[in-house]
Length: 471
Image (cartoon, rainbow, N blue to C red; front, side, top):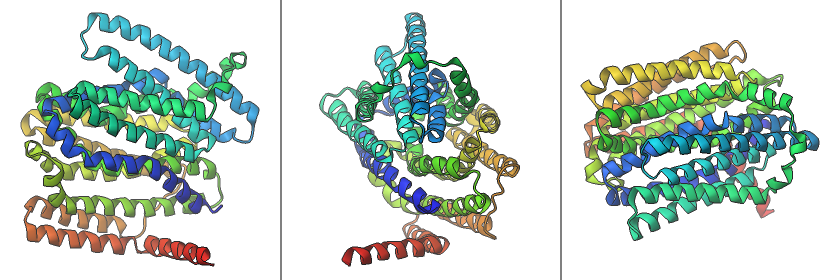
């Protein structure tokens, strides 16, 4: 199959699984913001932030290594069995060590919902690993189904726990743990992962080889956590949990774009690994980068154009201040689109150290700006630190990547992007009905014109398929 068509097919399948359920969760925002106080929402967000930090440290980023090496071993059943057996061995040892350490630490340090959080971490580790194994096997449909199960379970459980049983923050954490348990269980039995438990195949040399790839990704993961989550920690410490609740809501809308980026990145990582040594590599990578960048900038512009209408509908008035921080976070998300695209090129060439280096630079910038300005400009400092750190990372990776793959942008694309964001953000803050309508029209025209090639190509493909179905 043509490289672009295969990439599009995988993206659509993953999209159906991950994004549809995530969009449903956004319709529940009025429910969350009505039933949870800002400090409750901020507490849950902070707990999940630390769970996100711990998971890659516990696993030594093993899930990324197993995904990359399973791609290379798809045609060799024996290599696959060896990889999977060693994957489960390392995973089991890591979880055992963590559980002992966690029990000792929480004996002396009081942590709210400590045993529920431990369960949440364990099932997050298992579901994360099994999801990457599924991708490594090339089982995109199963990956998508497991995501649907996770999303539906989270939504239903949250409604029951928060609305019916009135469990508040405890209910949200329980729902996340339950959803990850359902995901891990489904994949474990659907892919019959139990058949790969063969400890006679434990190979320390193979484990070292896998760790050589994955361990440099740990500082990368921590750095990303710092960029994404140090804001929340610093905000909670300096401004309080209620401020963190506001900031969490501000992130909800840009996170729609981040979710879509994540969906594409999952299929892109496989395509990048498969075609990194192709003769037309530079043209292929440049074409994909330009197409994706134009599509996601249109989404960012469109989001800022429609939010003046949607924000009051979805968000309770007690969270109104969150509206002000969204444009900076949308800009950060657009920068992150390119960061993620470049990241997969590094990983395709197994240059995990370079990924870590650039992420560490971003993390340092993020912390410095937060600490220096959060007392002076409040939550704007958190949004600004994320935006600047992403921007620096994007520029650094674009320049550094030229050593390995030459990615070029279409002439005038960056200039057009700067102009459209300047206009749309200016009108966003005016928040006047006539100007809001004008903003929407400008964003719509821009999206159509900038993505004209993609729209025409997609239309031809759809019409061709309709024609074939009729015949």
